[in-house]
Image (tube, rainbow, N blue to C red):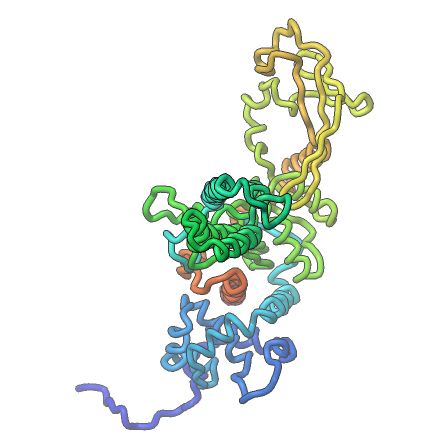
Length: 522
């Protein structure tokens, strides 16, 4: 009546491999990691102590776990004990969650990029990628941090300024009380030491020590005693706190107290639908055929300033930049265009006004300098009314990164009586414009490439390159929030995620190729 069932009988074969299909993803991960040279992992193991688990085994386990949406070290350790695929790939060894987490976030920090580059080279050798086209884009992923414990740069500056005013007022009161006494610090008085624009916690500490010495000579001076107590217990600690905040912030405008490397950013995944800022990181990737060729993690919310650091990392990883870099309008800018030109990379990168330039409204707008004519020999512009704007002067400005932009200023000889002036400018005098001629030249080059047949095809292809990769990471594999804290560990997480994605993609491509071969054979 029933099929015989017993749990006490030994069954053959005992090899777990017999239960794993030939085309299973775990075999792809196993084969890829086995191709790595053992010497790659030497930097992670200085030697000494008891024997360690083999790094290849742990690498396989973590990569395969990431392909299966398992990111917690405890869940990975559980899978190694219970899941046949994990048992096979680990050789039935059972590393605990501490070992897995330490290997993932500490030991591999100097090795993971080398592993990523080696596997990428395998993919290039087998023609999965050509390393010619580099489609770059970014996404924001929430940090493992409290959403409501934040520090804002503007608030720190505001509170620090108010604190300095209090210190100045306090010093003024002390000096008024002691204006007839000889100053212990000679000709320089406390007010000068505590000048609002220059006051620091170090200077305040020195002044406080002077006041404490005075207090020893006059222990019954209640105003002085009250001032010393206020400085020591309140004002000095607060100033030290604000300086600490400024040091952590650097050039950022915010950070999270629970993950000080995370910056508050506007996320697309807004479950409350109120535009609330959340602590996170800006993850940049470059893809080809939906394989990840490079990755980097940034603390800046905008993509523009992330491109050059990202490409510098890619250049160190691959030895050179890919031949063509394709990006959307978020990356368009003089500094980025100039960098790509200097590195002899073709730029298929849109600028902010690229799509608006195609509209009739833009093309008929006579106030736009793009609709004017430039005479290179005369170094002059001719506006829509036929007036000539001649060169007047040069001004320079530096970006936050130190890049220098040179602007040339041009002014019309006379706009008086021009019938088109109301459409051209709201200024009362003659029309004046400033132009970065380098950016104007680079933007024209970008426009020409984007409107070419090849450039247009690559720009359209960009929409199906990095975007689906991000969609796969976030939605298909549920990686919407980092597990680790701090920029170095978060970068490692993205590295593991990228390795897992590439091997998962390889398995999908292999399955499609085999399916196509079977159809041809049939």
